[in-house]
Length: 211
Image (cartoon, rainbow, N blue to C red):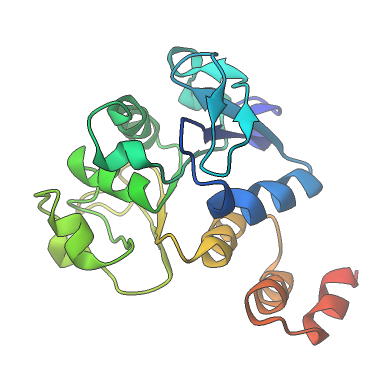
């Protein structure tokens, strides 16, 4: 991994991409020295669920795990209406197989379930029966919490890259897990960040501003 890849995060984008799910994540990564590059099926523009037009920085077939610190997949209608977004789940497999981390929220978790990537990893989503409808084999590893980071696939905790999952109503918890995984904040500031943006705890602001 080069110095640039250590601070480059790739965000997948596609039509009906759920804008709000990664806003905290990408904004605060950018403020802390990371570069966020968008990845589409092609370089053709896509339109988000909120009606914003995004021009992808690169096409999916140009993406390589060794060039990235993290791959982020967000929700979109396409995860539940066909196989259009399946190539992104396959890209997530290539990342995890290479030991590179992946973070998935909302419908993207169903895409990973269909790809078999949640069968042997602790994970969460919107609700357990949403993933159960995919027919996946990982129901016993479902955790009913805001967001989960699994250390690696299979019985060997070191096998494969780390995987973050979260449901659609937990963009702040999702961001917290990303920041913890990448070491963006130390433990004290990470706790303060979460209290500020999740709990509106004004006292946390002073902690974040402190040296």
